[in-house]
Image 1 (spheres, rainbow, N blue to C red):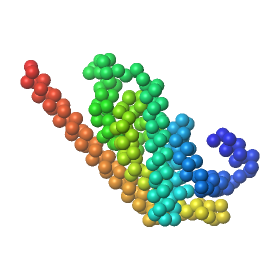
Image 2: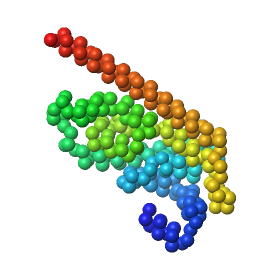
Image 3: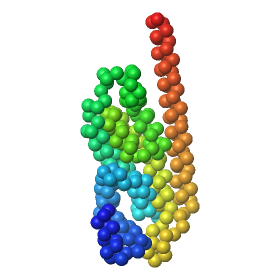
Image 4: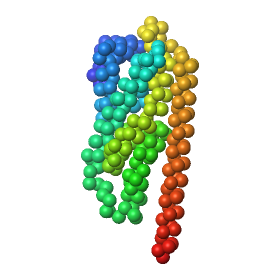
Length: 231
């Protein structure tokens, strides 16, 4: 990014020309691979996942349903690889810091960790649906040593609604005439579709959250009944 900033200033590029150059680069035959590579390495510098997802919609997703589907596919591939990279980094640095036998029943952090491990799939799914910071969730799940299969599956499924929504936001803007005509107004139909998907995602997260709360309440009631019967 520092190198591009130097290039941008040394060549006296206007903001629109700079954006147009990036768009032209990503629209080459190697553009999708470059985009996926950038997305994969993104968590190392904490660059916004949402910005790259919207970018995919603007660069790859406008014009047709096929383009939109390809933009979603590129983003899903890049986001899941980047999620696993951050997860593995968190897992490496968290190794040995949280153990099951360190008084987990009396330690708040350990209790939360145990709960997260028991319900790893649904918990990660909820965090994806409610759009918690993407990298924070990835690093945290690795640090807490959440089962990687549950993490990856929940990330892959839970990120799809948000990915579709933000790709739609990007695809609502046609960048084909960016340099000559400037930034065009968004397509209201595509933008509206993104908003609908976003609302559906939030509704799904509320459903999963209520179900998890109900299951936890049932577990507590069963534990209370068991303790009462023993005493």
